[in-house]
Image (cartoon, rainbow, N blue to C red; front, side, top):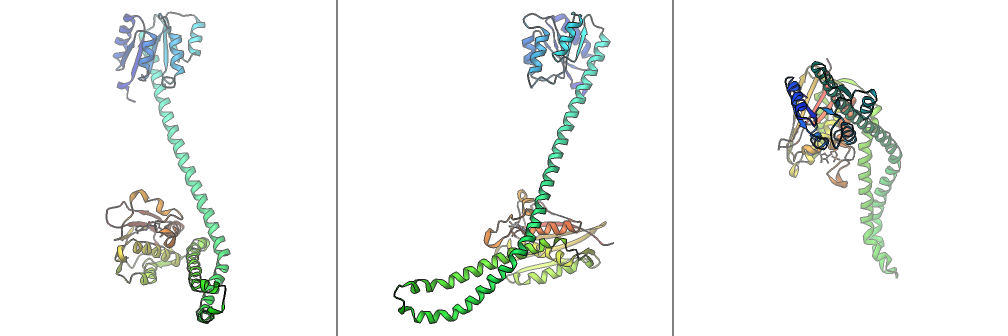
Length: 392
Ligand code: ADP
């Protein structure tokens, strides 16, 4: 709010009084609006002047009533009102101030004194507005921080939950998988035998059920593989506590990852790693290679016909290394740039995605004191930027 733009509404039924006030206040650079009656004033006040100078003795609606109505309305409540009146008794002054006026100047008034009061109330008003702006910003910051804390809490819960699932599910899952494999072997031998004895079953149940058993077994094995995949992904996450930090060349875990995803590159994916030899970080090598594995796997999944390129570049910047991982896949819309890191967010469908890959990537990077973000979509593939502390 700049001084030149500060607006004062002068309410007085006497035109001469309004003229005089206009002349005195305009000199100070204020913009003056005028109202000759209470009802006209209430209309103009909706435009929110910065201050109101209000005569008390007016026909139809007196100044006290105008002030009462101004304070009643949400839109005009905050505008400071200074009474200007020939009524000088203390009782009237107290009454006017009780209705919400900020000051009471008796007529005939002293020009410089009135101007000083106007200036003070305008300053107070400006400070009040600034304060309420700061309060609003503070409120917003508190809300954002609370959301972050709730999110962090949720993530911690998921971590504990993940560890429990890995622990509880792994053994029975191994039994199911092993049992189903043995059953399949047995079934391969038993099926032809039963087939030969099909005619002996008068109920027809054998004829009906026999062709289906193989499919049932495959279904069990497929389900077991899917659960094992999820448990395996969760295992990485549940090993959060494990540190195993040691100095290592950044290129090593990246190359480990290339070897581990090689089987998925056979259709025509080339991974080009350009990491200077001297870049060293303190890390858990298995976990850092997991980051690259997850990012490479996602990149390959995003390529049409699993053909394309992945470039990894690393450049030192002060105490950090900036790693860029760019692929030639379908890319990720900017609107999804944060959601993709949420646990269980996947666009790959239940069969193929767990939605834990990037969530784990971000967690591992943060555990190592780094950051990851998705670069804005440029129409050609996805580009992730990772920052990790360098070993000096
Ligand atoms: P998942 O791979 O199991 O779906 P992620 O957390 O690894 O889980 O990835 C979440 C989602 O982010 C993916 O389903 C996909 O939509 C998107 N995504 C991640 N990486 C890429 C990429 N390189 N290109 C396009 N989409 C990607």
